Amino acid sequence: MSPKQPTALDLPMVDPLPAATQKYFDICQEKLGMVPNVLQAHAFDIDKLNAFTALYNDLMLADSGLSKLEREMIAVVVSSINKCFYCLTAHGQAVRALSGDPILGEMLVMNWRAAELDARQTAMLLFAEKVTVESHKIVEADREHLRSVGFSDRDIWDISNVAGFYNMSNRVASATDQRPNDEYHALSR
Image: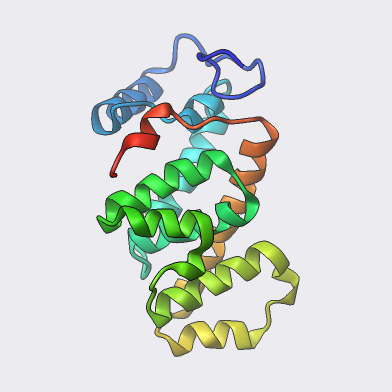
């Protein structure tokens, strides 16, 4: 894979990018110091990129009973189970940044059970893990456990959707050998 390609597939970005896409990439460059490779990987088809970013932005950035940190924690735990190098690197960095705790980011990447989490976070991550490993075995008792630690039904919807999104993203990233930007490795340490 050449350094210019964000995946092992030969799917070059649309050139030139539409003005709205270029503006979005410019904002990423300004705010993050890079354009995440996941965005570049989708930019061979602007409609696919727009669908991906719309869903990502809704799940990860929109109003929710889940904090941004909690959503990133779900992303990391799901990615850890799926062994997705891209998402572990990118979202592990986000956990480090949002929590201000590089140790928490590393624990979640390697073994989330080693982290000192409260009952709410533990229940949330147990549920995300079950969605990832055996979603067909989720029963009302699993949802009731989330309610018992303070999650609303809307929160349960959000936990389920964030976990589902990362299960899908992990599989695509792994199948296409998507690589994280090198910059992620040194951030928020």
